[in-house]
Amino acid sequence: AGFTLVWRATRPVSPGKNFLGASEFRFIQVSAAAVVSPADLDTAYEAIFGDKAGLVGQKIGVEAFLVEDSSGLAGIPVSTTALIA
Image: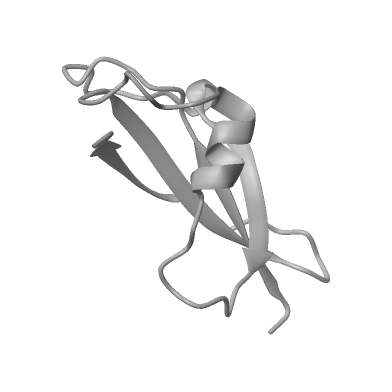
């Protein structure tokens, strides 16, 4: 314990876009570092970016990083992309 997991994501972009800059990621939610996998980010994502209906095939970026609770120091983000199905 002692860590919080921070989730960030991008708005839907063209599937041909290969670089997603740090400024494109927006805060989605935080969760306890020991939360059960897989994380359900769908509701939080749609609250920020809106409904994904009609965006099938678009790409989104997702990243997560740990923050140490007592110091507030953030770890290095781990990121991936996925296509909306």
